[in-house]
Length: 137
Image (tube, rainbow, N blue to C red; front, side):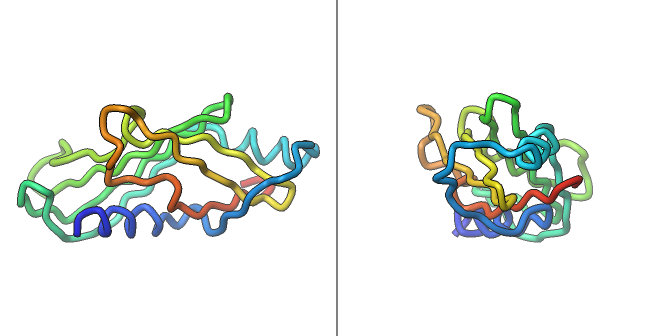
């Protein structure tokens, strides 16, 4: 149940909207610009009510996606309640939800999950995220 909730949250990131594979290894100048614009730490916080695996209720979620210049990255999902600014739980992260990424000439971003050895059943699955990069944003 919680895996489905996490996948739904991750897939709901409004920063990104589509995904496809890139069979062409050539990089156009606009494609290179899109890749450069994608590099960095992306976050999205939103209201969402549920309970952690330990049964702690939460009402806020934060998704973090880091795309690095070497075409690797990770994503994490943190959940909070209104009483504390510290996360109640953090799912994913560099060890549990790493990925490699590519941008094709149409701006479609492909994430390929590279599972961490410590937790191959992470609740955050980069392979289920849909992303699109637009030129200049």
